[in-house]
Image (cartoon, rainbow, N blue to C red; front, side):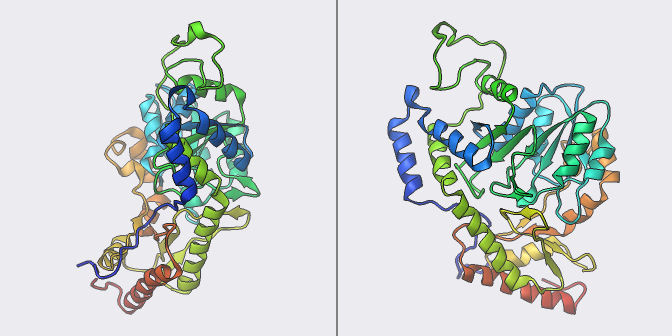
Amino acid sequence: MADTNRPRIHCAGPSITEREISYVTDAVTNCWYSDAGKYHQRLESATAEYLGARYVVPTPTGTSAIHLAMMVLGIGPGDEVIVPELTWIGSAAPVSYVGASPVFADVDPNHWCLSADSLESKITSRTRAVVVVDLYGDMPDYQRIREIADRRGIAVIEDAAQAFGSSWQGRMAGTFGDIGIFSLHGSKTVTSGEGGLFVTDRQDLFERALTLRDHGRRLDGTRFYEDFDRYYYHFELGNKFKMSSMQAALALAQIERAEELVARKRQLHQWYCEQMGELECFRIHTERKGLNSSYWLPAVSIEPDQQFDKLDVMRKLEDCNIDIRPLYYPLSSLPPYCDTPSGREAQESNRVSYDESLYGFNLPSNLKMTHEDVVRVSDVFRQLNLDFAASPSPTI
């Protein structure tokens, strides 16, 4: 039975101030029809400046930003796109949406991001692109990944949905690919409730994105109405991947506070390290040399010699009214993919992903958490550590 006498500690959640309320109120009141682009333009400029990128296209979700990337790159039936095995299904689903085949690569056990060696082993003559996921704010070895991709002639889509504010060797997450994407889901550090961002330095990809996100029209909101006779002229079939004014207003307010919000996430992670760093049954993932992580959700592994798994931990935390998230199932184990040729091959080859999935989870890290909340979570882990150390198979 859950400990309902104490407030629930939620895994994720935003920080909302008067700035966000003011911007959204203005958008709801004033930003309609021909005035609808006011906050979009400011959001695009603020995000590009923060990231050091040339072009930003807001989208309704992170998944739609990846879907748009597939369309912009012309990926379709007969093509293959490599995706890491351990990630949210939204990294792979857009590959299927355009009729291509996702091919699942293994991850590195130290950071759960794409293994460069596995990537290279999965490339075939049909490979068009790789989706590289910056999982939980961590990032892979982009120098090797870019070298492999450039040498083999495949596009890189950086799925930085969970890594807004992270950087690798001084370069911001979301800027390592031909296209980068972000999610602004309500659980993310920077949020618009639902929302996404498509990022690129290439003008050709940017212009394709503007057309394909607006049903094939070559218009761009309020920035031009040069060809009035072409206003309802559709050059090709596209999709409707546009962010609302209210989403853009909320996102802008959050982007303007990005450094503050990322610093708060890093503080929460530091508190966890101070509280749990010496527990022999658990390992908190920390940034390695060259990485500056935004620590969207602190990642924890159960040490491999322990005789328990993440479900044991999750049950105990739930009993204490504390929200916790498991590491993802391997994508090739899920019903949409388990019986595909790629899925069956991945089940045999991607052993790191299958092993890590059993023992990984995320600590709560909502932006309203206090040091007292972190201590409360850590106290449960200290007791678990004692229980598990005393017995190879405790009853929880």
